[in-house]
Amino acid sequence: MIWTFLASFFTGSLVSISIPVGLLFDIPISMIAFIGTFAISFVLYTRHTMKYMQKLSEGLTVISGGNLQYRIPVIRQDELGTVAEHINAMAEKLETLIEKERQVEKSKMELITGVSHDLRTPLTSIIGYLELLKEKSYRDEAEYERFIGNTHNKAQQLKTLIDELFEYTRLTQSDNKLELQTIDLREMLNQMLVEIEPLAKENEISFDARLTERSLFLEVDPEQIRRAIDNLLMNALKFSLKPGIIRVSLAVRSDHVTISIENEGALITKEQEEHLFDRFYKADDSRTNMNLEGGAGLGLSITRSIVEMHGGQAYLKHKGGRFLFAIELPYEATI
Image (tube, rainbow, N blue to C red; front, side, top):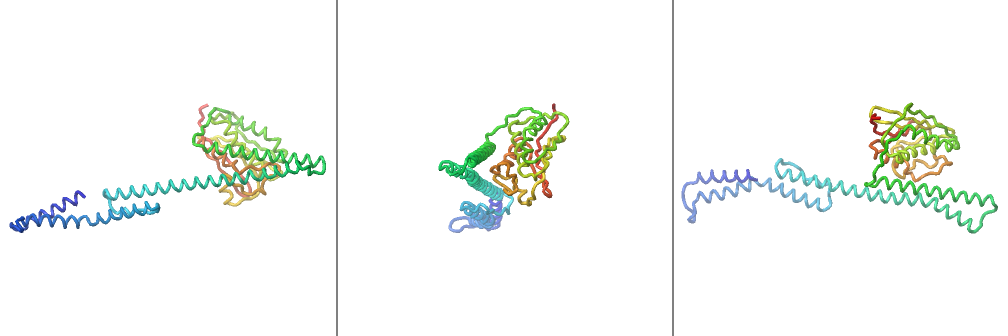
């Protein structure tokens, strides 16, 4: 704009100099020529700028009307072009924030829907069995015991669902902090396999453990890492073919530690594979080992959250019914 003013002033000056000396209505003709030339030149020189300012105004009107996808064309390299870039950046940021807010709201609704569905099923069964017991609608002592046992199992399943939900919501809170300790990861994993072995035998599953020969010290939150590994072990037990073998390995690389849990199960599609770590996602209830109670579909999602909080990653490799779930944690060989 300054250069436009200077150019208009220079043009007016040239014209006024070229005008002969004289008066018009007692005003020097040269001054009239200067003012007229300056005004006309200024209008001509600034017409593109004024048009672009109008585009900026129209663009702001469109964006303020709710169309955050609209972008003002940046065709100038001056201050107005910078203003257009800032307006576009503002619109893009607002669009991102609103989309994020929509996703959060959608996630909340999915959370409520998923929790309601998964809690209602065992609760309905519990109420049904209790009504049968209340009305003494059983034929003999054996059926009475079966009703009691089923009610207890459904109550345990309900507790599992609530525990999973509580754990998931706790992990997704922004103020959640890890309680780091230096532990022997090899010893923890070996102890977990010993504890879960009776349940595995009951379901005709055996373990093939391939752990490091030496102790492996790592700074982690012991409770959380145990939960993450346990989720993968229980997932393998639920979906392994019977009889079957679950292969568990612990390997050390230069900058990370990998815990792998491998089993054979029923085939799943590529789409199902991509969603297995999503919350409330269940690939197929028919694949589940019926001797083990199903959860809310939060186990793998909880595992991923825990591992990512530790700066690592959790992933799945699947081919031809062979599933390999792995946890990678950052590692520094300082001990």
